Length: 386
Image (cartoon, rainbow, N blue to C red; front, side):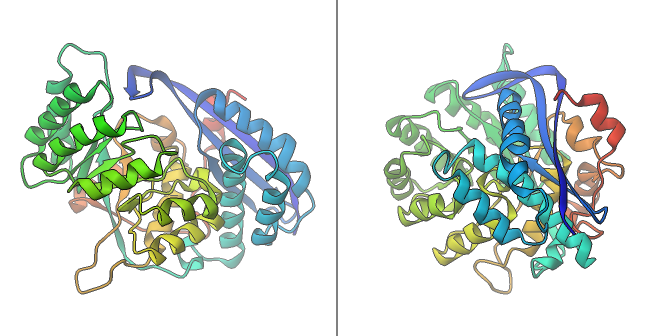
């Protein structure tokens, strides 16, 4: 069996309502799917992290840089392929878009491997370590509305009512306004429910301490990306000085970047992004590093149904840390805002929302070999922009 073609499908749809986070507002949603075809007729699917024009740039890397290296190679030789590509990219991009592009291809190769073996990905990875995965509902994105705090309070209450195990909000208007938003979310969910705060690295260390002390009083579960990802010393100061757990890592790449982050004692919860850091092959090494440093992992998840499914397999196969009669459980991050590429892409939808509602906050494991999902090609053709 040989690799015969690698295709990028960049999809985009307009949102009915503008959404935002601390760095920008946006009016369209993008997904970058990668399709790897083989001489035996087995096709694998992956996804690259990166919206908008970043997806278009990654498409060029996938098809014009990486594909020529891989045509004719054995798709089951995943480690050999990963290191060959990384070595060829090392002088030009040890982080960022080249690694995002490689991630999508690597995920597709694992999908192929599972199909060839006749095993779901989580079994190929040695699991399952759990039969169901708790899900937290991520919402409360920034919007330009007259009373954002009231909107956040109501949305947070609705997410709890929908059955999610926890919820997460965005901040980024400024420290004082952000504390008011966090108080509104706590009011919306009540005192006995976990909520998390995601800053998308918008604060100085001093401002992060101001917000973090308020989150300590509110009992927030974690404070995500409070400062720039390069500021590992700032992360470590915040982790030592706040009661609220510091989370981060979605903007870190490969085992070497994660080695530095973990050795700096920068995070209490690690959030690797499999569609960015180097794919499943590298994700497994990063989880091993995290667990070697006794740092639990809750994957960062943002994208289409391909990304969601990939992370469901990875979370199912992730060992408990720590173990025990009632072990700490990782959760699946689930974006509750509108996303056609999550809800309508697959021939058989995941129906995460229904599963959460009916189970009281969790989802079952994916079925079928490999990722176990198949995109609807007519849907792809309708939304494909490149």
